[in-house]
Amino acid sequence: MPLSDLTQDSAVQASIVKDCDQLMTAHVSQKGGVSGMALKTAHRVVTGIGPTYIPGAIGRMLPSTLEVLEPIWQEALESGDPVAYLTTHRTRTADLLLSVTDHRIQYTSGPIIGVYNKLRKSVKDDVEAVVPQLADILARHHTQVLQSA
Image (tube, rainbow, N blue to C red; front, side, top):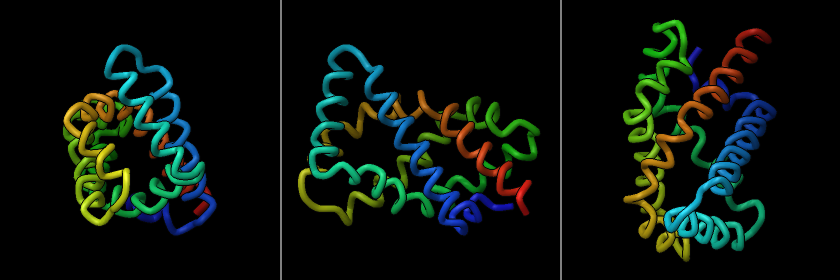
């Protein structure tokens, strides 16, 4: 089953969005140091736009994200342990994820562009850091959809 099938059921998609939003919020809150302050400030700016902005953005980008992850996800399934595979290939996974946001930011306006441009170079490490948890989210939902089919 392709990852894109996860967006066919609105309840599954909503659950993935919620899990990803919680993952992002937890990661930001755990960051320390100067980079943590910058990330927390950016998070406050974005959530200041509206409390549903981040979940909405995740939801809008989810179909494209699943599409670009599909090739590596299929490799991960063939390996027998998708979470371990994506974790081992976290740099490639992060590059794929960031390709979606890089493309999407071209069609965005307002303060989001400035925030994104300021953090883009440093955020790759943060994306790589959450790949194991993201892989777990995808694997859990993938398995649930397969079992319910």
